[in-house]
Image 1 (cartoon, chains in turn purple, brown):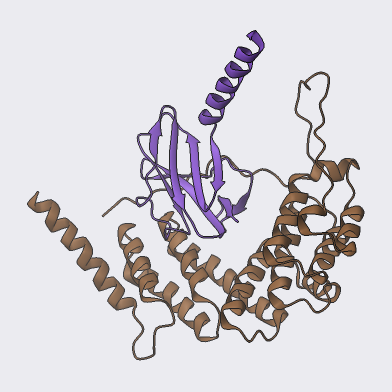
Image 2: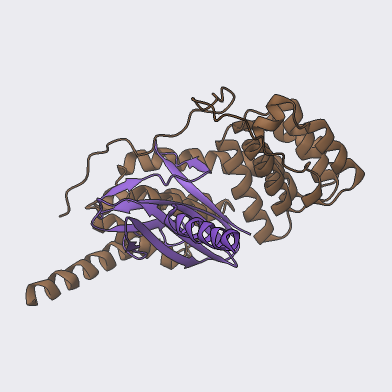
Length: 111
Length: 265
């Protein structure tokens, strides 16, 4: 019995830890962007899927994380995070590609 | 409130006027009208004068008139303008991209299907921009047998990913060629390259072998089965310092270098 409760507690803690983690989750054509930037007043995602608009895909604050889910057709997408409408930052993701202008874009692949 | 509405109307009319100025006279527009409007709107929002952005659109129109895909070129211009990059710098990058597309056309040869051709040109141009050489592409074409142009483009991009992961040229080109020859789809070629890149430490340390992966491809294994099962190393004690990865290219900066912001008009 004690073992069962221990397992449940471990799963709950692991689940909470996962929900607090930043990064990308791609599932069934939807990308979930999660980024830790507690000091930002606003964060938006700008990429080639929205014509690099710094305002069309604002993220929502969830505690210290900024999150946003976007449905995307299969393909590869370059993106950056825009903080407070003016600061363009490279996302902390596995695959980054040079943008040609001296910076780096994050890349997400939707299978 | 009234002044806010007035400002919004003025911004809209300014963007519309700029889009009208950017529209080509006479000849049918090669660049999609929406892209033209988006570029005008972005330029206006960044305080870029019409005279500065017009050469960018003309560059795209010239490239499109030669049969190069306009959409990725427009995307690069939008990206640069949105990030506040000076138009002259955007034009330099745009010309580099056009040059890579021209090279891609020469390497791909004839591709009858227009959509496939545009995609292949875009992907191969990206690979060339990431350090793949024309010589590499020729080696891929020779090794890939009768693989279609799209496979050649994606094989080159796969090689770009492997190259960035520090995989030696002969091994990387041989693996992509083998996969192309055995009919790997475009997505499979990239997935294979990404997986090898992600597990580069296993290949560098000898725990996994690229020769074995290539042999699995040659045997006709399905794409998802050509890599050996991943072995997670569990050290008895956690290392104090993360191991160095000398073969990996330098990590990009976490944040973009400072770039002076254009004050909004």
